[in-house]
Image (cartoon, rainbow, N blue to C red; front, side, top):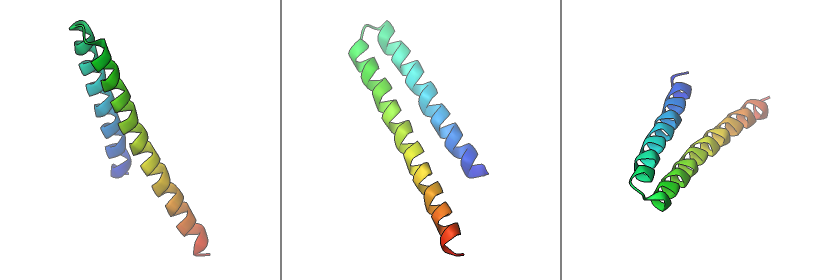
Length: 67
């Protein structure tokens, strides 16, 4: 259960950091870099989610292959 919370907090931290950084960059007139920061955060979160889904399917496969 602690791993699940760790993943949720990791995704939340990436999202909050990206939102703050993007907001600061937009206020300073660097809209292109703000967009790149947002896209990078989206890619990081997507990679984290895909990795965890892969682990889930591996565990499900292991449960059903032992029977």
